[in-house]
Image 1 (cartoon, rainbow, N blue to C red):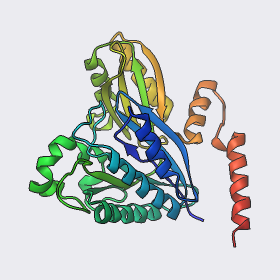
Image 2 (cartoon, rainbow, N blue to C red):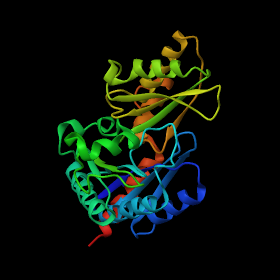
Image 3 (cartoon, rainbow, N blue to C red):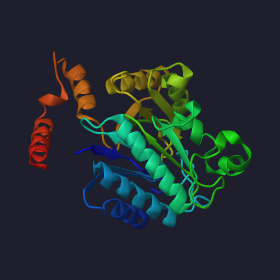
Length: 308
């Protein structure tokens, strides 16, 4: 049994009825579970976490995207987060001993189906990318929906991997395969967006900061609070605690206080255990020392043994 995770990022964070319909579509196939839905009104974005057997998750991802395409018009969409489509990003993540190659195959199958059945332009990214410049998601999403409207048909750089070279109201979708990613935000006690953007530049890889980090400075619903919004691409390269400390130190250097941090969606137990190990000065602490991890391993072993 091959288990995978899929994390659709949907460009809607303000209409509960739309989010509920998209969730219902995602959990409609048997064999898949919606583990989490993170809704953000300022970003105007929701992140769903799906998991289950590979074929079931593939079908759930398609239904999720279809529900988003039917309900979201990017011409009316406004939010802090960059986006190119109603179903903006749909990555597949291997779980357990599932090889990355299986997730690459799932991403390409989904991309082809979205292009053929929904008429969506699809860009493959991450491990599923067919062009080296498309491995990094920001390279695809840089023009955003508004800029991509002019580029998709005229600039070969933005020709989609699947689907038509034109944008409808639902925009385009980036479909990929990747390892676990931790979406992590830090809120700052200042109204100065320039501070958040400066800290984002200081910590992100592309500006010479920490490895495996993407970061942007954004506003929040509170006019007196700004945010450093980050993707940690590999917590084994840059631990979560190291990233948070780097943001806090950069904020202190600018005379700004960190208010709080937040996880968007779910994070691997191993990443949180590494933070606890550092804070508690535990000689050794791993995900395997948590009862939930051991119980999950036991249940999976029992299920695997029961499979014909």
